[in-house]
Length: 313
Ligand code: BDR
Ligand code: CA
Image 1 (cartoon, protein in one colour):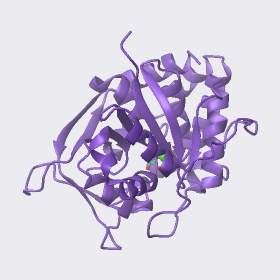
Image 2 (tube, rainbow, N blue to C red):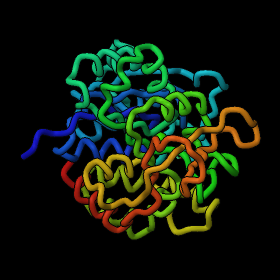
Image 3 (cartoon, rainbow, N blue to C red):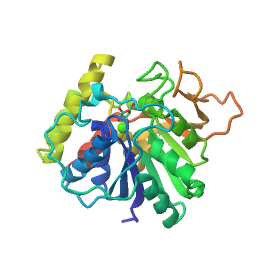
Image 4 (cartoon, rainbow, N blue to C red):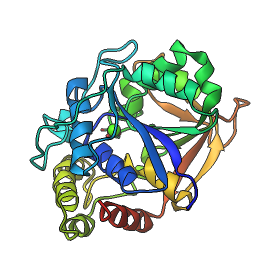
């Protein structure tokens, strides 16, 4: 078996973040060096606790979880309890975690680990606002060329936004951090709403998780049932978009996704379109290509992968 790929997951769980973490924990191709929590879907105190709850649910309490930025770089924190519930992980009854939070700050951990490990060996997987990643890049500019790749969930273009008509939540919450990351020169793969809105948690797909009959399978079904109710009302679909696991699925099976390498610039000036990811899909500017923007997904293959991997936990 090839050497597992080293990743750091930066996250604001969130039920869909939770499923992404479970997918990574269930996949031997990935070596999760650490999980860094950021404020986003709910405040930081809850996101770091939720990350630990998920590691314990998966039977992996040795996973290192770090707490990071409590608020975005410049703007006030915007949260999304209407989607994720008061705790961020509403749905199942998960016990209070026993595993301890690491003492080191997430930003220090990111800098230290990227400077210590071999250059080009670590992939960052941001699933929430990009505050921790931007802070690490500002704190130690030498880390950027050492990052192998950033595969992130964020943005939207053809599909528009989900929190304003033009902005997706993760980018909207900290557009200035996103701007730092998209200008960093690190190769980026972006999973925007254009992809995730095609990955719907239909009744049949949720049943497949429940039928695993395991603690993880049942909790996943309960999380997704809670999570989808808001988006079903909003979009009128059977099921809601399962955003964040697309990032981990890409690392495991990149062929599930199709996209195009182009320039992405983040709007940080206009309040009307704040946090919009302006994608130069047609190459109409001379701006340098900085991201592979995904647009299509084999959604059946994606859910089959999820069920198989969560079934291993
Ligand atoms: C993103 O926002 C959060 O609510 C989800 O966890 C996902 O990361 C989707 O816009
Ligand atoms: Ca998230």
